[in-house]
Length: 373
Image 1 (cartoon, helix red, strand yellow):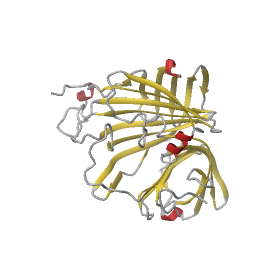
Image 2: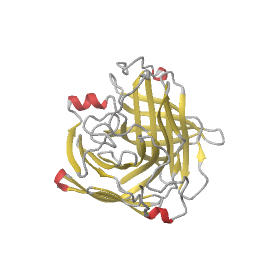
Image 3: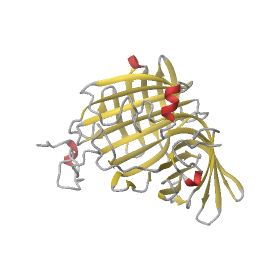
Image 4: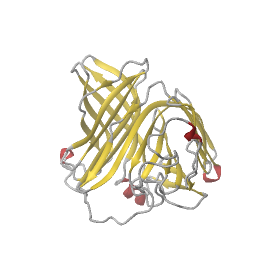
């Protein structure tokens, strides 16, 4: 039987269940976050996250730090308890200091190369992303709600004895919260195959000083777009502005699908064209240490025992890592320039998360082996 938890003291229930339960028996229900931190020049980058999987009984977390061409990872997991106010597993914890404004993330694992105590703050309200539903033939692969927030970091990270100091002036960041259904834990029998001809994805949160821009788009192999949003928010609290239907010109390194940057064509509410120029400066592949996209070393929601903790270092130049990266969603640190009819409107930096596999007709990728000329 479930037991009451501190959240059950508050009138926030939405289904006739205790707050330690969820309103579905689907094993793939999840509730997690990802945080990004990065220097303005892209020389150092951090991706870290925390997740709970109530129907699997698992809680886990990870930190990946990219510096000098290497991804250093720590991952930890254990048994999920009933108290959702406690976001902690192993040496990792998240403290909500001021909801939707200020959070602290700590990972104390120096024996595995990473000790971290950093605080996220944002002058921008969080942005609700569109409901994310992805289907393949007869199967629903993902059904989730999400929000994103662009902000800045302070604190310290010690990476194999080297201390890095995070400041608002030198570091930017963003965070994403999502919950719903997506493949988690151990693989289960697939049933009738539901093949996909192609996958094309963009998730782009940008800090442009007194404004922030968020663009998200996903298309299938023939270019049909089934997830789309382009919006900017303002630090002074003005109403968010939608920026139309973004069209993409992605620049790829020759012989690869690795984006060097791109130009996004947007439209403000006065129907004036805007151009968002992105230039990439380093990346983290999310299937290399962070547990996403079929990471062969570790996946989210796996039961690894009650006190699982390990570290690893990956060289991005290693041939095996490079082959894996080619089939990963990749988070690039990008500088950004937003231009309007009268010239430069704003500039800043952020994340250009991109993934494209298989066929994508608008990009002229004809199949799984197709690359840029």
